[in-house]
Length: 461
Ligand code: GLU
Image (cartoon, rainbow, N blue to C red):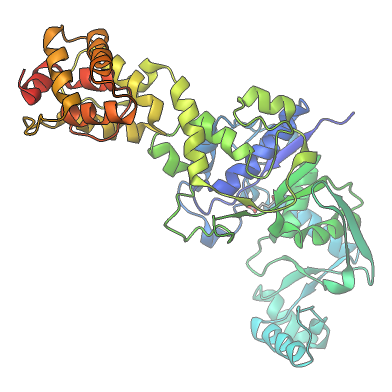
């Protein structure tokens, strides 16, 4: 059987987005589930849109998530050619020239004004989606020569007439498109670069890609790509188109929406646990089949099945993301967390350990944990009103024992016994009286973390 090879092929036009990360993740899971290879390559021919550091940002953020490609521009396998499109121009030109020679593609000399004219004429005739008519034939040879010399031409593929191209989409089932709905399209632009729909075919073929999972915005591109496979007598990979990710209102995520953190970098900077994001992303448009939600990378690899990819859009729910991250924070090693925190207060190792162990239970990320440290920097004002019976009893009980977590707990228990209050009526007054906060993690530990001196001063012990 042929090796399963999948790929993620971003353009280095920006940082790694949630959507891109999810595409990479599904391709990764698909490959790894089948003992195959996951490839990272770069579509960097739209030179004007490339951003500095785009490639490394993509790779670094994927690595942070735990998605390490088997092959990439940094780890190429010579057998499959180059992993950046900008380094493959000779290869694309070789195929383009072959197609021209075989009359499967031709040079088109239209200027942008002439194309605009064509577009308008078609619009006037009520044709909605533009289809190129072979206008170049109308130009004189002399004009053609001039434009050729000035490099004012592109290359278009010559489509077979009225031919259906169909594929069995891994997510959506059979999709079929007729060439008459497409029209001859550009495979090489006047700037000398190949277009995406052309280059991607050469890349997928050269790299022996077996399966392509990508965003649904590419559904309309797939027939164009199938045409190229057909013209070159190549076997296409199997395609699956993932549904969109929406915000909570059901609108497609827009990178310009600044109210939502959409870049993996944002989560990295806030100190989220990468395994949690990996887990969360896997469930953005896919289900485990048994309602299980918390799954390690190994478990996900084991049970991944493209048949459970969702056919409807998936909502990006930050509350759920935080919930996932919380579950992972709880299990995170204390020392790892301690190493990531900046303790600008003077505390010993025991204190750090108790702090992290207590507060990680309720935090989604390191940034939140760090925020909680601030509480201990503040001074506690002496408590003014001690009239509440729970408070009064607790102060009394606390004054009788030594200041340790167990003894503070005992004082709370005694207070409960004597006042016969429990739950909120017990904890809330004690918490407010001691820490001046309404909410927090385990009460005895919270009190202990403030330290004997501050708590005694506040309670007047
Ligand atoms: N660079 C394209 C994108 O980011 C890749 C499309 C594909 O996977 O074929 O959408």
